[in-house]
View 1: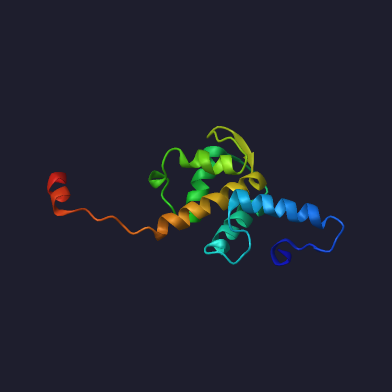
View 2: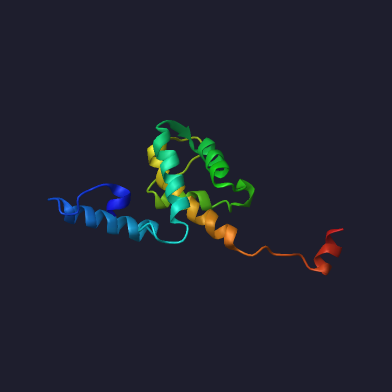
Length: 133
């Protein structure tokens, strides 16, 4: 935790920090820096956290897809709502959000992107290809 969050665990607010960290871990999964894909998730978080600007929801999704190298057409319609919900935000393409708030959305979405990339590609069978002609 010290490595990523730069705080003194021996400080007077250590129990509050540990409780907050445990809450994040329950809500967002791997937060130790050692889990598979953590580095990419952390990079997505930092990217949007450090921009320090406002985005419309739809604009953010396009930038997020570009950053994560995913095609938004491949993302199920309900998935962005899930990403926002996990970050305790309500999604609307027309809403304006601060990039610091969207950083957690990016962290959650990065996990989805990593999992999506690791799934084997489904190949069409000959009978499906024949129907497609």
